[in-house]
Length: 512
Image (cartoon, rainbow, N blue to C red):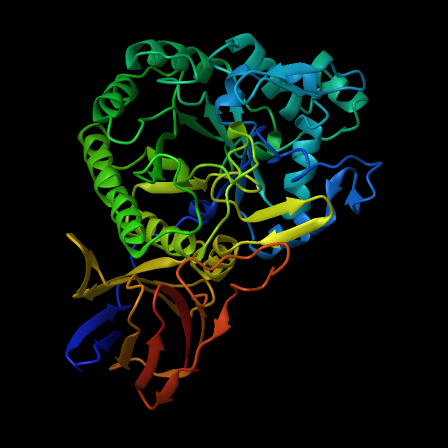
């Protein structure tokens, strides 16, 4: 079945969009909507954890309002404890009753209470319905320490570590779905060369075994090696060469990629930007397409069957912290521009579904491009949160071909596509489309002609805000929220209009 779409400028020029749903492509992994929480600023303490004695409603110390909000967006996994902090984290200090206070030298030299450790994290992901993506300490730890952590979490045998876990309140083994073999080994994770890291990674991969009997066959733990920073294709080459020459004693299932959307100007904040800054940041984020393509091409040389996935486990916007917040907190506001940027990146990951098996936005709460902001008992859902909620139907949906001429809008010497779109057939058999109007000034009129496809109805939501810089605050928490969009459906024709700087997701119900 083929769906033909057209959008019309105010001058009524038309450009066709063709959606071919007759040959569904690869599955868009639900893991591209993964989350990330690190011990920095108020990401964990105050964001997730308030402690059982807090007046803020909680379940075993974990905020109830945060759990309720996150369950609604169905996060597939949460990456923890970092980030940079992962390579100074020693897990034994975060279990049991007597936990020593330590220094978080990665983020501000603040005191780390270790109140939030393995059991608390596993309780948290269980409460929100997510899987655990645990990063082991390669930078300052040892293969023995990592191996013992995996045994502690996953064994069902009465070993010393299994009994210790039971004594600490958990009789049954935990499930670890994803395991990161370090973090940013080229930087805060040890300042290693690629060759140095590969030597370390082989040992960690060899000795980190998952003993959970439920994960010994089809549901095995995914091991993720540290991959490149942005454009470092040489790093990818070294890791993939090692993988191609591996022996039976070690293996990896994926490599990571870290690529943030940075503002050019030093000190630029998330709010109060100009249309020129808006365009510059969108141009910056669209480089993700080039980066994913180049690293995938290197991987194809050694892995033409695409056995090794690419996990973009740190991505998102990075601005100067809000006024009054310490630099190490990475606390920033979140505007409609961030939601547009999130859509563009998720669309890129979806279009590369054959290689991109996951992604983790940085970060989940109170840091960088967050889903949620909290302040004492207050909570705010950001535009990026609402965007992730709208993208739930794309989890494990099958990618379908979408062809169109995007048109362009210009801002000074920057030319950007006006439209970005993806399509998929969901597990519910509905046809889902995401349509992003990048233009911050002009609406985008769409006329949908649907030959060969009969639909019983159409529904959709638009996330726009009244301005490109609109954001939700503790005083105005619902200023930016999805709104129903009017879709005129007559026979096999549908017509709708996309507001400026907006993301629209629509679903077409097949006729029975």
